[in-house]
View 1 (cartoon, rainbow over the protein chains, first blue to last red):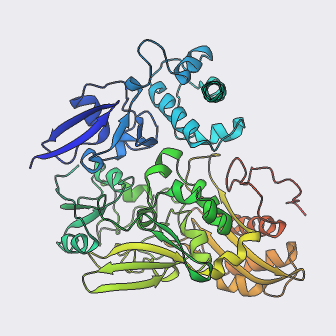
View 2 (cartoon, rainbow over the protein chains, first blue to last red):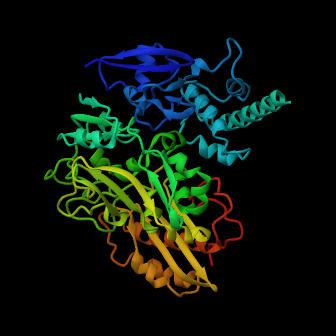
View 3 (cartoon, each protein chain N blue to C red):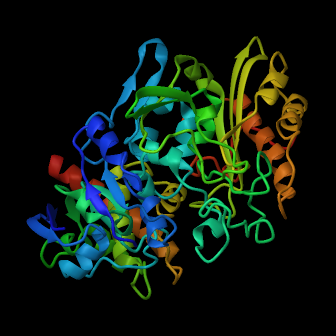
Amino acid sequence: MSLSITLTVNAVPRTIALDDPRVTLLDLLRERLDLTGTKKGCDRGQCGACTVLVDGRRVNSCLALAVSLDGAEVLTIEGLAEGEVPHPVQAAFIEHDAFQCGYCTPGQIMSAVGLIREAQAGDDPERVREAMSGNLCRCGAYKGITEAVLEAQRRLAADAEEKAA
Amino acid sequence: MNRFDYVRPATVAEAVAAAAVPGSAYLAAGTNLLDLMKGGVMRPARLVDLARVPGLDAIEALPHGGVRIGARVRNSDLAYDPGFARRFPAVAEALLSGASAQLRNAATVGGNLLQRTRCAYFYDPASACNKREPGAGCDAREGENRLHAVLGWSEQCIATHPSDFCVPLVALGAVVEIEGQAGQREVLLEEFHRLPGTTPERESVLAPGELIVAVRLPGEAAGFAGHARYVKLRERTSYAFAVVSAAAGLRLEDGAIAEARLALGGVAAKPWRVPEAEAALRGARPGAEAFRRAAEAALAEARPSGDNAFKIELARRILVRALTLAAAGTPERLPALPASPHAPHPGVSLYG
């Protein structure tokens, strides 16, 4: 069975022929589109390493069938920076030492981008920690991650204010 | 994962017809189904994808104050819908206490009702499980069973239903709208899930191929909005299933309880409404004594299914906690840790 789907991946429209409906979004990104920034950790929706944005919302790409997302817009870690300029969340992760080994980091960063878009946590570190609880970090960089998310959120809000003025 | 046929119907009627083929399963977000398929626990021959079926996405206000929630509404969209959260705060709190933000952004209302138990023996194809393979036996009976059922279980199955969302829903009298080849019907959520008995593989009243299209809450359910809470005890602070949980809603008149709604989660194969405890509270003054009496009534029939006798007293205490918090009034804003017993509750004394 051949199934053809269209996805906009990091702002580039793509038509993709799938020979098998079993392909998850995660495997499609990594194995077929060579976008290996998105990581496979548990592959069961427990660790968050595979987090990407689908139609602007953070989801676990390991628990989504690619074929079912026909027509969707997908944003991965590769699509976040503006050329060589890192996204404010990426910059804040570097400044706050929000990782050690880095394996969970693309998922953490995409989750943080989703969290900031959701705009539910405010500046409360407890709400940020709760909202990031779907992303595990075995190195235990949680303190830096929380600081980075709060810092990036402040910076994005200031940028938006500057643009509006 | 097994191979399967994939179909993407364009209407409810097409979906129901496609799923009438034996071995079919509906696919919504797939957050539970794909996990089970990856583990070889479920092996559907055909997936009927609901992604393109229209009419399943709305949160509609009904006359007389009720609400109709489409089966494909995402957990987070429902929890953050301001009109919904204001009128049914315990439901929003339960939703936000479940899973992770990523999963809540994907997982759907219909899928939540139909999610499978988290019993480790059900998830492990090398273990005996009557639910997965009728007649095979139950390795949970002599295994790690401290989180298993204390109400409504049978010798064949001691698994629990893992939903948070269903707990306040069942307390508030939710109705499940179902479509099948024989037409439409509706069932009270309280009667939707089945207890295991001798057929633990049959988890709900759905006939093969029937589809949940919506869940309704009646207008009277909004009458509890001022005093409604969900409390969930987990083995870690966040992102875990309930050890036990409780939803409580109170309608107070002249300082007394005019009507109470109570349900427990994590204790049985279904969300467990406790009408005896609700009756015990009618006319009572809210307070520790009345709440403890209600909790005793709620767990009167409970018995351990293994190393889980502690869950019975824990459930009583969580019920008292939920009632205490509900009586104090629904907070303006949910705590940073929704439903957590560790969340600070300003102005509420929890220890008498």
